[in-house]
Length: 222
Image (cartoon, rainbow, N blue to C red; front, top):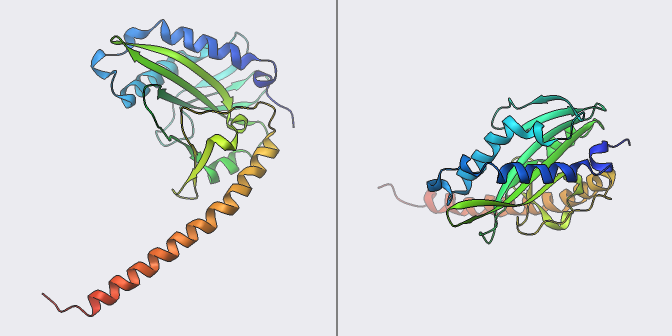
């Protein structure tokens, strides 16, 4: 499989540096009253990057850029690169002052369909920050396709077909040598364990409400 040069030539590392520099140069975008609200910070970061992310990418890489997506879309913004690869970007922010955070990434079913085209990339733009002395310090940035995130730092949540989640935003494990084929096969293996466990949970719930029904069938009307 051909791969986007963004992730083979280290261009993503330059993008990470540029994003951090840009955000730290635009700290006034945040209202001080919003610093303690991770959602408000996340919304502010997303809004400013929707308008300015293309400026953080080295010249000549982006062919077409789009930031007009519905809220439930896979993408916060997206672009086609100069070699025709289509990059859908999910922007996540994390407050380093919090102990635990498990953000949803995407549906396993949606990703499996999206990745049937080798030209498609589902990229995570992960930005970590600190709130200190009444201002934000953007401290970490990772720009990688989802398949570079090791399964040891991911998990599956029971929503729809299943949601891929970061298990703990304080612990990210990235390996850019993982191939998409290997990562997707590991996803299938994880689902082979996940789905039977969900069936067991549903079976237990069915049995629970059978008992509830029996209780109410024997109960007198009030």
